[in-house]
Amino acid sequence: MNSLIIAYYKNLPALELIFNALCVQSNTNFEVIVAEDAQDNETVDFISKWQAKKMFIIKHVSQADQGFRKTKILNAAVKVSSQDYLIFLDGDCIPHRHFIEAHTKAQVKGYALFGRRVMLSKNKTAELLSERKLALPNFIELKLAKAKKTKYSFYLPFIKQERDEGIWGCNWSISKSELLAIDGFDENYVHAGIGEDVDIEWRLKQNGIKLLSIRFGAIVYHLHHKENYDELAVKKGYAILSAKKKNKKFNDEERTEHFTKEFKDKKS
Image 1 (cartoon, rainbow, N blue to C red):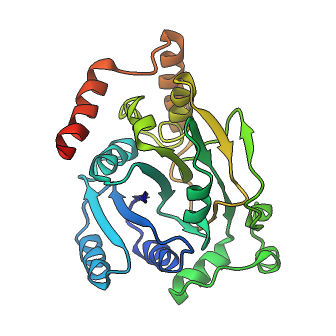
Image 2 (image 1 turned 90 degrees about the horizontal axis):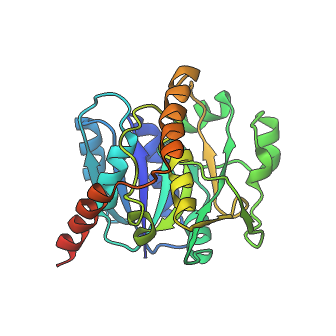
């Protein structure tokens, strides 16, 4: 069984589409953890209603809205996960019906898996959100709707490639033990674009983890929206990463001991 962790921030229409997509997954062996980088009462009510439906297990972790703290809330979600394999999805990405299956079948010890995303147009996004129904477009419809990265809409799960880089925080997976071995996510990143993927990829590789692309199996459809970070934010993130690389410090032994102990205490 897997734990699907959804990084979420104030977008209930998108979350509803995601939940609808999860209801029709070909592999139903998963729990869902909504990792909310805010504390919104509407989100609590929404999740409570879905929990009552009992379509799948739903957990919810949240924290005060104090700027971008995605890595912190992701760590909180990992802590409450009950499964040994973790799949990460962003709250603006709708999963293909074989999304869970693709990540499940491709699991290999010592590897992190990653997929890509089809970039929906502004009009197609507005259409999906207004109808509030799951009707994901096919390749021709995507082209007509002026979507980008449409090649990633082809479901070809037999295509798997070992790559040197490629993790995007919106669509990837790893075993819990291998994520804990590098102390989870680095909470020093308080800007989008680095900490939840570039940094985590570098640290995993430093610890011997290899990367496997399953981008034609693990498909997601990214809803159009304005960028939530700018060039300056990215530069700040890379500055933190550069300092870590210079010092060759990919792990914090003191925090790792504490982080891992919390999991052991929960299991005992």
